[in-house]
Length: 205
Image (tube, rainbow, N blue to C red; front, side, top):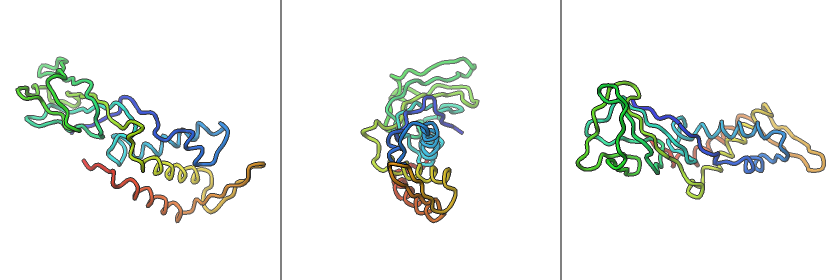
């Protein structure tokens, strides 16, 4: 069964500055905590391990298969795919070899051998074929509902981490006060909103 792994992770599509504005936090004292939460909520939806089936920020992924498919294109997961960087494999003798990128063509997320070229015979073992490719959205092409959904998820996680349950109030001298609700009902509403925003984007394998 093929699998896809992350080789180079993307820059966060929800920036620290955006997150702090959303959480109404000033100063740098909790920056590391917020960065960790941004990574946690992004991981739920982004790339090979996320449920969305998309790559959000631009990243490098690797498709790993047991062998080349006989007469079929290779489907690269978690698009959009912008570039195939390398195709390496173990031949039938177990020797490392590569396919020239001039012999293949990419159509959206499907990688085809060009006319007159056939996938080579490879060893049949886990990871015998490895295709490295660039996937993800440029910042200006990111679907507009992604960042608002991440902010909702981040707010949920921040509230749960700090507030437990119920309604709490934080007073910052000279600035004012902030109230937040971390009840089950609030989390349910937030989860429904996130699902409504992101479900139209989901790619099913």
